[in-house]
Figure 1 (tube, rainbow, N blue to C red):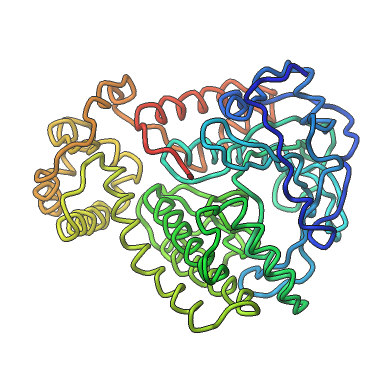
Figure 2 (figure 1 turned 90 degrees about the vertical axis):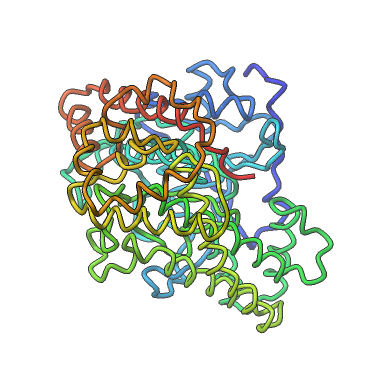
Length: 475
């Protein structure tokens, strides 16, 4: 492969030893049809110079990257699934394929797989991913990145030529292998596993590893586990707030689906809100609404409590509780900041900012099903009342129920109003990623192998990302 100067392999995970992961090999797939490659993400780790044939060799047949993991590693972890503890988890259809440094930031990133075949942790599963599931994840990560949410990035999607049987979609269905670029795959459940076996030594080792590789600023902290929990609480609060401002419902907020860097990943039955609805759920099997839109902060805090419980084997409970208690205030502040970012206005001060955000949610309540989530932010971006009132929802915004929001927003200054010059904001409707849109573009792929709507949707999301120009995720 042509080596780019930006390619910096740095496989750190093996340093933890054999109790944290198992060496595995990918399946030998019948076919390897390249459906998506993220060259923008690849450029950040020096892999954009690969030809398509080389790309398929590494991300379809999983030939090792130079100086990187060989063989790949399936991580071991436990977790609470819908708050029921499951000690039979682990990477059941994926593995960590490579670790490398990001150009510019120097962050340690992982290339991890989904659908690469069975591992020791597959249980009764086939270790595969449906092509539809891969398409959905590519779209989710693109949209979340555009909206400023810390997220993994879909790196590669390759169709693998197998017919899969699934109970929740028409079968047989097409198969794929996905590669994601993520800021670490160490999960809350990674700590829970070693707490389950009462191995304080391994929790201490994992804490040291996470701090050294993802929180180097905490090196030398007097109480490392507590310092780590404080940092994870802060990043988790930011992530949750960004989900809420994006109108995003993850769907399956189990402890094995949350990582230590505060970056979301692994998108199954997610949804974006059609309109504001705290009770909106993404997973058809979430009958109690445990992970509904409005309960996501509660779910994340509960998961943080489970992480703290695991860390209690190596830290004082009182100090861990104090760290947990910082979540509420951190989340409130992060939600205010996230909403101001989405509205494109500069902060004025705690009280004024909070009042604007509260009025925005009251406006959503006033609009009900008449007001879709994404168009609200599109219309009012940079505080543009004239633009909003002249648009297709102008009559709605002119109603008395929106008067408070209009009045408060008028007191804020736009943040970088030159962004409104982007062609994207000349449209009357914003880019959205609603479930019916995903189903429609998938139908064309399934029925006629027509990928045009998929690529058009990605192009539209990219136009939105460039226009919004929200602060970079992570870091």
